[in-house]
Length: 86
Image 1 (cartoon, helix red, strand yellow):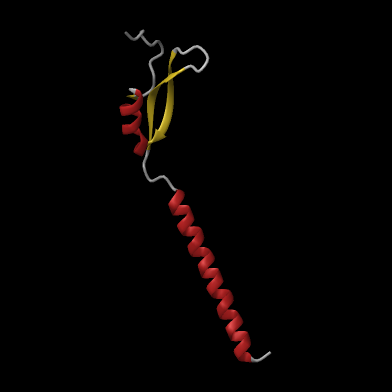
Image 2 (tube, helix red, strand yellow; image 1 turned 180 degrees about the horizontal axis):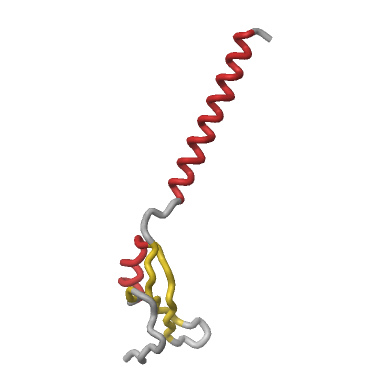
């Protein structure tokens, strides 16, 4: 094997290592949630009884507006006793 072939092989291996590192970094960044977590009182419905339920959950800060708009959720944990809704 010539020195040129060895040098080429080393360059290819190094390039693959750089690509693997770049891919790992990009993948990690793509799945990272940069928004802080926010605790909300989520309004739901019991599937069996149809009763309204209130559960304290933590969601991405990016999801808070949709929860408030779509479910009537509120910021902060649910109260210990929830008054009946009209």
